[in-house]
Length: 233
Image (cartoon, rainbow, N blue to C red; front, top):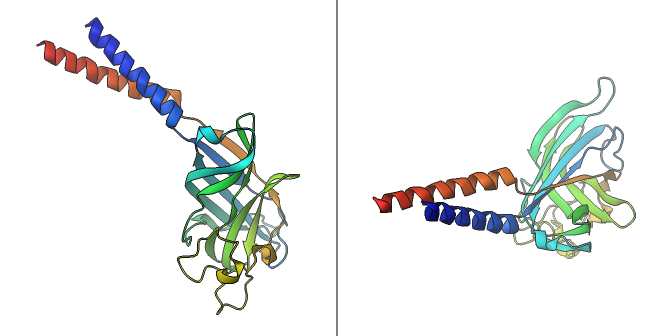
């Protein structure tokens, strides 16, 4: 019985170590700028918020600024009418900003300090086709890793969607091939697109919950113990 118990504990500990080192860190970026933060071709009363989430390997969390491979990228958003009174009237809520993406970027430019992500650079992510009383058209979100400002984000409009699926959403180095030549009211260069004022990004990150790993280890221990009992009979 002691042998079975020790074997089960050993298996459980191995699983904890394996999952604890291999499981990606979940990074979340939240942006919710104040009233009147939009300029350019976007209505100044159009309020917006966005929540970015992605997984990054712990091995990439080395102090400095560098490209890190990311997986599981999600980006949800909400639009609201910030015209007072009454303020913050919902227009579109919890939509997928990536609903029309042909491909999700596989790398983000991350700044790491003390093992924590402090700034995120993604390039324009999108797009969502908005249709509401304040704005109708394609909207993107650009998370910018700024050396001076840190992590900021902007809402983009008047940016051409790709003309063919082979062009990645994040491939803005090929500006001449990016814009649909039939479209007239859009920019080929994301820097020339209508942008909101920069808004700060609140960044958090999560590690695997020890409780969940312990539950899994306990289940493995119980399975091993039951198998030993069956063999003993």
